[in-house]
Image (cartoon, rainbow, N blue to C red):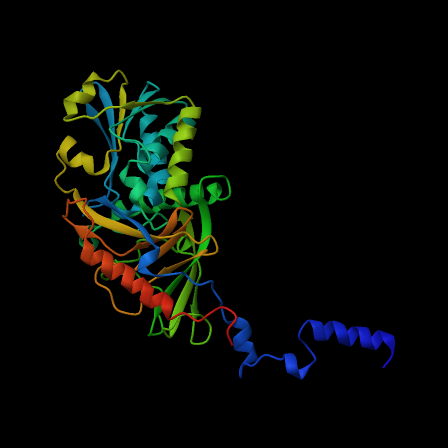
Length: 388
């Protein structure tokens, strides 16, 4: 063997090719190359660091996004987003700002400093408004800080039986606007990023269909769903037969909301700590434009009895920076919305509750055990990366 041949053979041997002893041990090399390997989550009770509770502002008829008069003031409502507050905030904020432009004055009061109020304030500022935010609490002490947070624009949004053509049209527009905005925030210090979401099942998933519609067309337009890949046995690390993989947007509330507060202040807004008991209290404000982003608070402030709480809670494992994927579902069937996990820099968030009509801010211990143990079961059954 001449020197050139020897060198070539040595290079290929170093790469694992050409020598029988270095070949893969899989009976199906093509499938082994396709197999997805994921770092394992250290799931155990001694890794739990906290449990948080938040009350989503659920409105069976869907969110309210409209303008009216409050004596001499222009009043714009922007509330009732259920589990889609983060997802739709930029789109609903844009429409609220468009409604505000119909007034003559450019002095605006935004009531509420959660994700909806902050995005609305920024959309107003972009259109030349001077903004003051009035709120009884600011991040990190808002309901928005308690969210799992991701682009999930249909999560707990509307009762399918109460959907209307007008609602669908408005939803489609705000969802498109919001999706575009979130994409532009990736990599800019807002805690927004792309992650793969894996949903597990022992039955091959059907083609994508409307899970909310009861015979109605899908609420979410195809352009906002993203491609979905079905992975069969041997192609993923989970112990169930099938997993679907879909690219989704992740939002880290602790990073995002802090950055948003900095932004509104940097662009000249003021934040005033204040609460309002009834609509006439708003008349004491000097601003001729008021945008109501109080979420569940609109039930008492404006008498909207359609609004009810949808209690959700999250339990967190110690953060693992190497975990950059989401999961949905588990080995054991779960009631309600099922299990879901989101990795974040402040912890690995585990969720799976939506208790409508429940006002308590105390953690539900039975739900906490179900969620933690369900995730322990799921992750303990995953194959180890690199194992043959």
